[in-house]
Length: 261
Image (cartoon, rainbow, N blue to C red):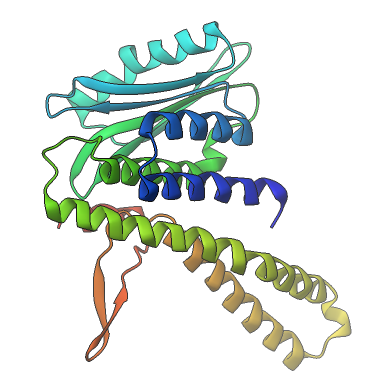
Protein backbone atom coordinates (compact mmCIF):
# COMPACT_ATOMS: atom_id res chain seq x y z
CA UNK A 1 0.00 0.00 0.00
CA UNK A 2 1.47 3.37 -1.00
CA UNK A 3 1.72 6.44 1.21
CA UNK A 4 -1.35 8.08 -0.36
CA UNK A 5 -3.54 5.08 0.50
CA UNK A 6 -2.23 5.04 4.07
CA UNK A 7 -3.06 8.74 4.39
CA UNK A 8 -6.63 8.07 3.22
CA UNK A 9 -7.11 5.46 5.93
CA UNK A 10 -5.62 7.91 8.45
CA UNK A 11 -8.34 10.46 7.54
CA UNK A 12 -11.10 7.88 8.06
CA UNK A 13 -9.55 6.69 11.31
CA UNK A 14 -9.29 10.24 12.67
CA UNK A 15 -13.00 10.80 11.97
CA UNK A 16 -13.96 7.55 13.69
CA UNK A 17 -11.83 8.38 16.73
CA UNK A 18 -13.19 11.94 16.88
CA UNK A 19 -16.76 10.59 17.01
CA UNK A 20 -15.94 8.08 19.74
CA UNK A 21 -14.03 10.60 21.88
CA UNK A 22 -16.68 13.33 21.55
CA UNK A 23 -14.46 15.90 19.82
CA UNK A 24 -16.06 18.99 18.30
CA UNK A 25 -17.83 17.76 15.16
CA UNK A 26 -17.34 20.80 12.93
CA UNK A 27 -13.64 21.08 13.80
CA UNK A 28 -13.09 17.38 13.01
CA UNK A 29 -14.99 17.68 9.73
CA UNK A 30 -13.14 20.83 8.64
CA UNK A 31 -9.82 19.08 9.25
CA UNK A 32 -10.96 15.95 7.41
CA UNK A 33 -12.26 17.96 4.43
CA UNK A 34 -8.93 19.73 4.04
CA UNK A 35 -6.88 16.55 4.33
CA UNK A 36 -9.17 14.62 1.98
CA UNK A 37 -9.15 17.44 -0.59
CA UNK A 38 -5.36 17.49 -0.70
CA UNK A 39 -5.17 13.70 -1.00
CA UNK A 40 -7.54 13.35 -3.97
CA UNK A 41 -6.88 16.68 -5.67
CA UNK A 42 -10.03 18.65 -4.83
CA UNK A 43 -10.03 22.42 -5.16
CA UNK A 44 -12.96 22.69 -2.75
CA UNK A 45 -15.10 20.44 -0.55
CA UNK A 46 -18.06 21.04 1.72
CA UNK A 47 -20.33 19.25 4.16
CA UNK A 48 -23.99 20.13 4.72
CA UNK A 49 -26.31 18.84 7.44
CA UNK A 50 -30.04 19.53 7.27
CA UNK A 51 -33.23 18.99 9.26
CA UNK A 52 -36.39 17.09 8.30
CA UNK A 53 -37.45 19.95 5.98
CA UNK A 54 -33.97 19.97 4.38
CA UNK A 55 -33.08 23.33 5.88
CA UNK A 56 -29.30 23.51 6.37
CA UNK A 57 -28.41 23.40 10.07
CA UNK A 58 -24.63 23.08 9.84
CA UNK A 59 -22.00 23.40 7.15
CA UNK A 60 -18.24 23.18 6.85
CA UNK A 61 -16.16 24.24 3.84
CA UNK A 62 -12.60 23.83 2.59
CA UNK A 63 -11.50 25.81 -0.49
CA UNK A 64 -8.21 26.72 -2.08
CA UNK A 65 -9.60 30.12 -3.08
CA UNK A 66 -12.68 32.28 -2.73
CA UNK A 67 -13.49 31.61 -6.39
CA UNK A 68 -13.52 27.84 -5.78
CA UNK A 69 -15.65 28.28 -2.67
CA UNK A 70 -18.23 30.33 -4.59
CA UNK A 71 -18.30 27.88 -7.52
CA UNK A 72 -18.91 24.94 -5.19
CA UNK A 73 -21.65 26.81 -3.30
CA UNK A 74 -23.29 27.66 -6.63
CA UNK A 75 -23.28 23.99 -7.67
CA UNK A 76 -24.94 23.09 -4.37
CA UNK A 77 -27.69 25.72 -4.56
CA UNK A 78 -28.32 25.64 -8.33
CA UNK A 79 -27.94 21.92 -8.99
CA UNK A 80 -27.71 19.45 -6.12
CA UNK A 81 -30.43 20.94 -3.89
CA UNK A 82 -32.94 20.90 -6.74
CA UNK A 83 -32.08 17.33 -7.73
CA UNK A 84 -32.33 16.08 -4.14
CA UNK A 85 -35.70 17.71 -3.55
CA UNK A 86 -37.32 16.97 -6.90
CA UNK A 87 -35.58 13.79 -8.09
CA UNK A 88 -34.49 12.24 -4.75
CA UNK A 89 -30.83 12.36 -5.76
CA UNK A 90 -28.48 10.48 -3.42
CA UNK A 91 -25.08 10.51 -5.12
CA UNK A 92 -23.65 11.73 -8.42
CA UNK A 93 -20.41 12.41 -10.30
CA UNK A 94 -20.56 15.09 -13.00
CA UNK A 95 -18.11 16.67 -15.45
CA UNK A 96 -18.59 20.07 -17.09
CA UNK A 97 -16.76 21.01 -20.26
CA UNK A 98 -14.61 24.13 -20.36
CA UNK A 99 -11.07 25.34 -19.81
CA UNK A 100 -10.29 23.85 -17.43
CA UNK A 101 -12.80 21.02 -17.15
CA UNK A 102 -14.69 20.93 -13.86
CA UNK A 103 -15.60 17.72 -12.03
CA UNK A 104 -18.00 17.63 -9.10
CA UNK A 105 -19.67 15.04 -6.87
CA UNK A 106 -22.17 14.69 -4.06
CA UNK A 107 -22.32 11.82 -1.54
CA UNK A 108 -25.10 11.40 1.08
CA UNK A 109 -24.74 11.32 4.84
CA UNK A 110 -27.28 8.75 5.96
CA UNK A 111 -28.29 6.23 8.57
CA UNK A 112 -30.58 3.45 7.34
CA UNK A 113 -33.23 5.21 5.21
CA UNK A 114 -32.65 8.61 6.79
CA UNK A 115 -30.54 11.06 4.75
CA UNK A 116 -29.53 14.10 6.82
CA UNK A 117 -26.67 15.66 4.90
CA UNK A 118 -24.18 15.48 2.06
CA UNK A 119 -20.53 15.90 1.17
CA UNK A 120 -19.78 17.68 -2.10
CA UNK A 121 -16.57 18.47 -3.92
CA UNK A 122 -15.07 20.38 -6.85
CA UNK A 123 -12.05 19.47 -8.96
CA UNK A 124 -10.55 21.29 -11.94
CA UNK A 125 -8.42 19.78 -14.69
CA UNK A 126 -8.03 16.47 -16.47
CA UNK A 127 -8.12 14.26 -13.40
CA UNK A 128 -11.57 12.81 -12.65
CA UNK A 129 -12.64 12.51 -9.04
CA UNK A 130 -14.79 9.44 -9.79
CA UNK A 131 -11.59 7.38 -9.54
CA UNK A 132 -11.76 8.06 -5.79
CA UNK A 133 -15.34 6.83 -5.36
CA UNK A 134 -14.56 4.20 -2.72
CA UNK A 135 -12.67 6.66 -0.53
CA UNK A 136 -15.35 9.34 -0.91
CA UNK A 137 -18.12 6.88 0.02
CA UNK A 138 -16.17 5.86 3.12
CA UNK A 139 -15.50 9.52 3.97
CA UNK A 140 -19.22 10.36 3.80
CA UNK A 141 -20.10 7.29 5.90
CA UNK A 142 -17.52 8.27 8.53
CA UNK A 143 -18.86 11.83 8.70
CA UNK A 144 -22.41 10.50 9.07
CA UNK A 145 -21.40 8.18 11.91
CA UNK A 146 -19.50 11.00 13.62
CA UNK A 147 -22.60 13.22 13.35
CA UNK A 148 -24.83 10.53 14.87
CA UNK A 149 -22.36 9.76 17.64
CA UNK A 150 -22.16 13.49 18.44
CA UNK A 151 -25.96 13.80 18.12
CA UNK A 152 -25.29 16.62 15.64
CA UNK A 153 -27.73 15.00 13.21
CA UNK A 154 -30.61 16.01 15.49
CA UNK A 155 -32.06 15.20 18.87
CA UNK A 156 -34.75 13.17 17.12
CA UNK A 157 -32.33 10.27 16.86
CA UNK A 158 -33.49 7.73 19.43
CA UNK A 159 -31.49 5.56 21.80
CA UNK A 160 -31.40 2.65 19.38
CA UNK A 161 -30.11 4.94 16.62
CA UNK A 162 -27.25 6.05 18.86
CA UNK A 163 -26.45 2.46 19.83
CA UNK A 164 -26.45 1.46 16.17
CA UNK A 165 -24.25 4.43 15.28
CA UNK A 166 -21.72 3.55 17.99
CA UNK A 167 -21.66 -0.07 16.82
CA UNK A 168 -21.21 0.98 13.21
CA UNK A 169 -18.49 3.43 14.23
CA UNK A 170 -16.57 0.61 15.90
CA UNK A 171 -16.95 -1.51 12.76
CA UNK A 172 -15.66 1.31 10.53
CA UNK A 173 -12.66 1.83 12.83
CA UNK A 174 -11.96 -1.91 12.68
CA UNK A 175 -12.35 -1.86 8.89
CA UNK A 176 -9.77 0.92 8.59
CA UNK A 177 -7.35 -1.10 10.70
CA UNK A 178 -8.00 -4.28 8.72
CA UNK A 179 -7.38 -2.47 5.43
CA UNK A 180 -4.18 -0.98 6.78
CA UNK A 181 -2.77 -4.20 8.23
CA UNK A 182 -3.94 -6.64 5.53
CA UNK A 183 -3.50 -4.64 2.33
CA UNK A 184 0.22 -4.05 2.92
CA UNK A 185 1.25 -7.75 2.77
CA UNK A 186 -1.57 -8.49 0.31
CA UNK A 187 -0.16 -5.99 -2.19
CA UNK A 188 3.21 -7.74 -1.99
CA UNK A 189 1.60 -11.16 -2.48
CA UNK A 190 -0.42 -10.03 -5.51
CA UNK A 191 2.52 -8.22 -7.04
CA UNK A 192 4.80 -11.25 -6.85
CA UNK A 193 2.15 -13.68 -8.12
CA UNK A 194 1.38 -11.45 -11.09
CA UNK A 195 5.08 -11.11 -11.89
CA UNK A 196 5.40 -14.89 -11.88
CA UNK A 197 2.35 -15.29 -14.11
CA UNK A 198 3.86 -12.84 -16.60
CA UNK A 199 6.61 -15.43 -17.08
CA UNK A 200 4.17 -18.26 -17.76
CA UNK A 201 6.43 -19.72 -20.44
CA UNK A 202 8.76 -20.74 -17.60
CA UNK A 203 5.95 -22.42 -15.65
CA UNK A 204 4.35 -25.79 -16.12
CA UNK A 205 0.57 -25.84 -16.49
CA UNK A 206 -0.13 -27.14 -13.00
CA UNK A 207 2.03 -24.49 -11.29
CA UNK A 208 0.42 -21.70 -13.36
CA UNK A 209 -3.04 -22.99 -12.44
CA UNK A 210 -2.23 -22.98 -8.74
CA UNK A 211 -0.79 -19.47 -8.96
CA UNK A 212 -3.99 -18.24 -10.60
CA UNK A 213 -6.02 -19.81 -7.76
CA UNK A 214 -3.84 -17.96 -5.21
CA UNK A 215 -4.22 -14.72 -7.20
CA UNK A 216 -8.03 -15.01 -7.25
CA UNK A 217 -8.09 -15.73 -3.52
CA UNK A 218 -5.92 -12.68 -2.80
CA UNK A 219 -8.17 -10.49 -4.96
CA UNK A 220 -11.19 -11.77 -3.03
CA UNK A 221 -9.53 -10.82 0.26
CA UNK A 222 -8.88 -7.31 -1.10
CA UNK A 223 -12.52 -7.06 -2.21
CA UNK A 224 -13.78 -8.03 1.26
CA UNK A 225 -11.60 -5.43 3.00
CA UNK A 226 -12.88 -2.73 0.64
CA UNK A 227 -16.51 -3.78 1.15
CA UNK A 228 -16.01 -3.39 4.90
CA UNK A 229 -15.42 0.33 4.35
CA UNK A 230 -18.73 0.67 2.48
CA UNK A 231 -20.96 -0.67 5.28
CA UNK A 232 -23.77 1.73 6.20
CA UNK A 233 -25.88 -0.69 8.24
CA UNK A 234 -24.32 -3.03 10.82
CA UNK A 235 -26.62 -6.00 10.15
CA UNK A 236 -25.77 -9.46 11.45
CA UNK A 237 -26.59 -12.77 9.81
CA UNK A 238 -26.34 -16.31 11.16
CA UNK A 239 -22.98 -17.96 10.52
CA UNK A 240 -23.61 -21.22 12.35
CA UNK A 241 -26.19 -21.97 15.00
CA UNK A 242 -25.53 -19.72 17.98
CA UNK A 243 -22.95 -17.58 16.15
CA UNK A 244 -23.56 -14.48 14.04
CA UNK A 245 -21.37 -12.71 11.51
CA UNK A 246 -21.42 -9.25 9.96
CA UNK A 247 -23.29 -9.01 6.65
CA UNK A 248 -21.25 -7.37 3.88
CA UNK A 249 -23.12 -5.73 1.00
CA UNK A 250 -22.25 -7.26 -2.36
CA UNK A 251 -22.69 -3.97 -4.22
CA UNK A 252 -24.32 -0.54 -4.02
CA UNK A 253 -27.79 -1.92 -4.68
CA UNK A 254 -27.40 -4.37 -1.80
CA UNK A 255 -26.31 -1.48 0.43
CA UNK A 256 -29.46 0.45 -0.49
CA UNK A 257 -31.60 -2.64 0.16
CA UNK A 258 -30.13 -2.95 3.66
CA UNK A 259 -30.80 0.70 4.38
CA UNK A 260 -34.46 0.26 3.47
CA UNK A 261 -35.07 -2.61 5.86
